[in-house]
Image 1 (spheres, rainbow, N blue to C red):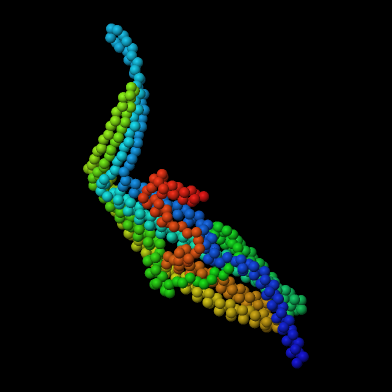
Image 2: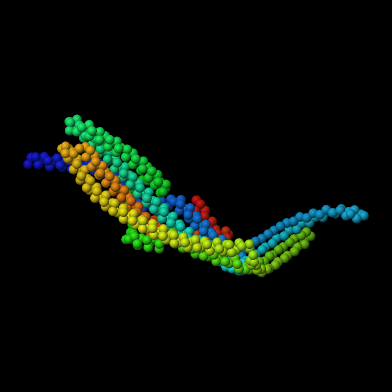
Length: 478
């Protein structure tokens, strides 16, 4: 009974020591966990700080302005002209009575011209339609960029977490091997092991220190990529949370990809744009009709003036252009055919990428499950080998090998967990749902319709819309 009581007190004291160690380790981490950034918060920050998104938004505004430029050709053109002319003439009469004359005159004129194309074979109308399709295509390209920004954010987030766990694991490994080395030296002093066992432990410690240095270098690289991607240095990062909802099969992933991916929608609009450009090129074979008018006023010296005005209706059409017009039509037709072929290639590419992404996800899930089982078995084996080594049933090398197997299993789980999250979000990219709308991220949203609605009618700089556009562009430039 006394022995049992002694053992019980000893176990209680050991328990309290363990609790104390846990509290000492955990307490400094509590503020860090409270201030840790989630994956969702990091994605918001990356989206708001992305220069790549700003660049592609500017390219979208370029496409918007092309609609305004095309629409302007459907309207009349009003212009003015003014001139002033000073004439001076010196003459010498060669008759019998030689006489020199010197005359000067000033003439000023101002004119106002206006013209409008009444018919051009539909060229301007098709140009507007093609420009609108280009806008729709560019919007989808912007969505692709948005997905890329968010996916690289997920990668940077998970890589930093992966490398930090690697560093922590390597540090712990160094501590464990240091303990094994100390135990080997103690046993060598009493003659239980040989110098070889000590040398093996020393060699394994040196390798562990080297691996720790390598892990720290990889972490530094991952943090640099994180800073470039997010715009801020990596702070404390929390657990990434649950995996997003994804299609249940490879076939469903491929189907969703060819239906919803922005690349496939973009090239569909490119095809429509090419078709309108082909019709526009065909309009060049048709005649054009233009209405124009001219008002003029000329004033001379001695209060002499002259007013003039004219209005004309003209028609013109091609007869021979050196082969330029049919060449442009053939070029437009070839571009349409190229876009159609591009649609087929894009569909095949997306199906392949979607299938690969789903396969990588399944592989990562299987790897994580296998690593969890491997860790459980390796931990039992390591603890058993270490206890057997204390009674001389195992060598130091056996202990080191068992510890290395446990380390490899733990590293495998760290990698598998990171790979699983990255693979899941890669699938989300393939089905076209890694967007701020689908994720419902609280970001500074960019509305492409706001700018387009202002420029679609090609407003002048003096109109209310034109003034509002100037204000928007000034805000953007800041």
